[in-house]
Length: 233
Ligand SMILES: C[S@@+](CC[C@H](N)C(=O)[O-])C[C@H]1O[C@@H](n2cnc3c(N)ncnc32)[C@H](O)[C@@H]1O
Image 1 (tube, rainbow, N blue to C red):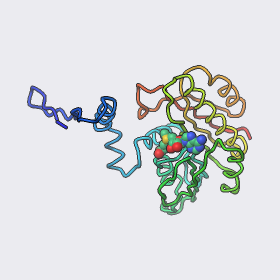
Image 2 (image 1 turned 120 degrees about the vertical axis):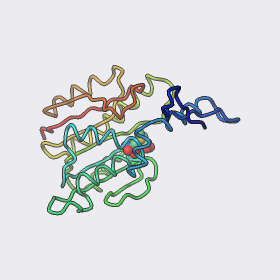
Image 3 (image 1 turned 60 degrees about the horizontal axis):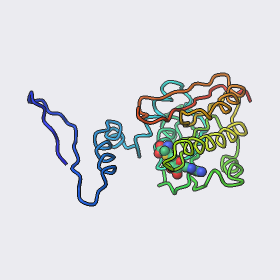
Image 4 (image 1 turned 90 degrees about the vertical axis):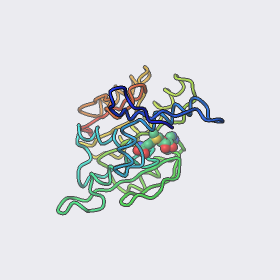
């Protein structure tokens, strides 16, 4: 690994990674991108489990749904960045004195390291009856259902797109069942065409539906987020 210095004596902090024997070029590029990504550095410095935390921070800074006292469901929560942010913002640990205390329920296919203030479960949300399990764990209504679920990439763009839409639709179905009137639904989608029906449905169920690409979402990725606010109940 080398750090470059620019001609005028100014330090250019871009990290270049040399291709090591046994490491594929794609892995070298990935490593180089991680090392040079300011969000990766910030996540490390601020104690978040991944750069994804900044996506929900930026979305919440704009739409303000993670308020103290809110009950949040985080679908596809591993490794836990979004849940960490939710715990802080909804005051799940009761650290903001005099403010309402919220709850965070996270589920993921993978096991998630415990997060103080969050209830975490390992579950394939696409399994039959998964939503019933989530509802039982929740034990009542929610104010926010958010999903960053993404199936591992197949390499086929259209297949990946359809898979993510299926995950998003399943998340929306849960949201329709558990959200309190006025609640918020946030989900990751990929730009690519098949999301039209979902958008139509969301527009019927919510007063406002926005499609957003927060700054923390990589420009070269086709991901974007749908933020639906004001659930009609
Ligand atoms: C981009 S990551 C989520 C990152 C997370 N928001 C964070 O801040 O750490 C996507 C997650 O979706 C999960 N996932 C994909 N399909 C799922 C499914 N059917 N049920 C539950 N989780 C799923 C994956 O296991 C993965 O951990």
